[in-house]
Length: 242
Picture 1 (cartoon, rainbow, N blue to C red):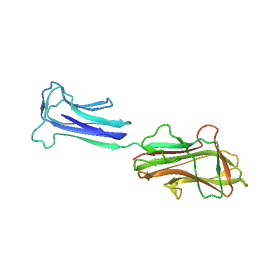
Picture 2 (cartoon, rainbow, N blue to C red):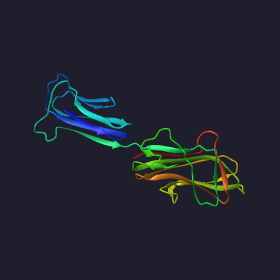
Picture 3 (cartoon, helix red, strand yellow):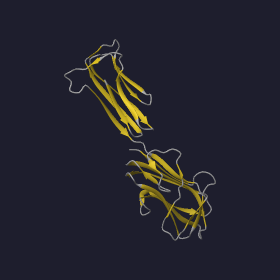
């Protein structure tokens, strides 16, 4: 008895199987193996040759496709009861992984106080990412609908203001710089020439094709933002959680 399932997307999969047996010609226990093309072999066995046998395995797919096969591992012939409507089965529960990020690694960025909102340049992409797209400049495009954890961080200093401090805001915008995502905008009163660090995180449901950007604003004066000499000044990270 064999059964083959092909996993065509990267993700985390739980595979459950069961079989109803009547007898076996093998001298050993009744056994089935769940094997993947990744080289994994997960075996389930029973000392009883007649009855129900079940098992499960977890397969992590990073590069699709991956095949999973259920095979007879007894070394003999297994007989199934003819009066059983269903003699064996496999069930797959999958969770598709999706994560990625963009970063800003510029030294200076000018933000005009006369403009309501300006897009934050995020030219550097995360070292590793799965199921997100970077074809839109400075943005992350969602390829898998689901609930995502979103993390935004900022470290920098401002200059050019005519007062002791000035509000500086950064937020996440979906499909255009119109309305910030609820719970994902941060406004901080920044003191001139003093480095400030802040972060904001939240869980948001995104749909396939959503384009995510960071928008920044300040008022009333134009400001120049200085970022660290090395490392990212601004980061946007997303990770699907369900």
